[in-house]
Image 1 (cartoon, helix red, strand yellow):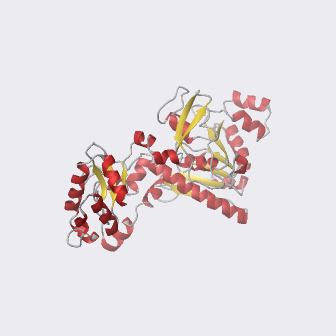
Image 2 (cartoon, one colour):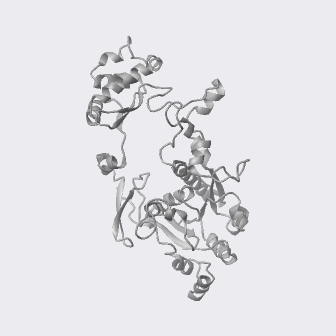
Image 3 (tube, helix red, strand yellow):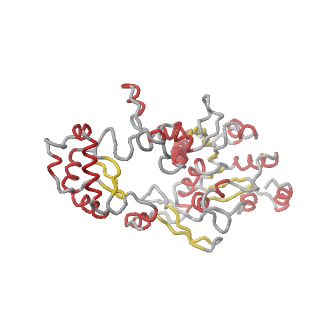
Length: 407
C-alpha cells in the first residue's frame, strides 16, 4: 500500500479555497478541505482578524488554542472588505478561486458588492458555501445565527436535560457549527463533482438550525402520525430500548449502557450475575422492559453503584454487553483507543516555541490520509506572499495598500 506523503498528492490538491468566514461553521468546512490538500486562504480584516482568534483559551502569542487548532493549514491574508480597494482585491482573488466559504449574516456580502450574482459573473465555476442561522430564504433569513440558538430552534435542546427540568446544552455549545460545517463540506464536494461534469459552479445554502433538525431521528414522523411530542427523559429513559442510558458507579464515575435488543440485555444480565433477569417471565422482552423501565433502571443502577467503573466495564466487556465510560478529557488522554488511532496529535509550533495537542484529521482515507501541515497562522502572515505570487502585485503596490490600510 502506498499513501500520499505531500500536499500535492492529496485528493484536493490544486483546489483553492477562500475562507472569508468567522469562528467555526463555514471555516470548519474550509479546514477539512485544507486537511485533504486544498490551498486555503483565510481572508481576515486587518484590525483583529477572525473573532475565533479570541475564542477560547489564549496563548502567549495572543491567539487562542481554538484558533491554532481550527485554522490549521490556512494562510492568513488581510483585506478590508469595507473599502473599495479591498473589494476589488477580493474580486481578483475570486477569479483564481474554486471555493468560497462565508457565514456572514444574510445580505452582508451583497451590501459590500460581493453577492453571489457578482461573484458568479467573475468566476462562473465558483462554488460558494453560505452558512447562516436560518438560510438564504424564509421569514427568519435576516435573523443572526448562533449554534446555541440553532440547538433550540432545531429541536435538540428541548430534549436535553432531566424531566421537567431546565433544558440544557446538548454537549458542546458549538455542536451546530461543526454539524453545519460538515454538511457544508459535503455540499461543496458534490458541487465540485458537478463542476467536473458541466464546468458550472453553484452555491451551497447551509442553515445551522437545519443541520441540527436533521439529527432528530423520527421526531417529525412520530408527531405527524401520532401527535407525539417527545419530552426530556434524562439519562436513562428511551422510547425504544431499556436499559439505555447513563448510570453512576461506586467511585463517582459514570458508564453508558445501550441494550437495544433482547440479546444485548441478556448479555448485561449475565455480566450482572443475574441471567434470570433476561427470562421471559421477567424482563427478557424489550416491550416488558419498557413497560417496567423504572424497575429495570433501578436494578441496573443499584448494580453499577455497587462497583467501580472499571469493574462494571470489565464485566460488560467479558460478556459482550454494550457499555462504555463517560469520558472527560483527562480520561480521553489516558484511553488506549485514542492513542492507538492517534486521535490526539502533537504539533510543534515555531511561533509559540512549544507543542500544541489537537484532534487529528478525520475521516481516514487508506491511500490519501489528510494532513496537519501547520497550526493557525498569525494575522496577515501570508498577505504579501499571496498578493505577490498569486495576484502579481509589486512591492510598491502592496506598500500602497498598506498605507491605505486596505491590508
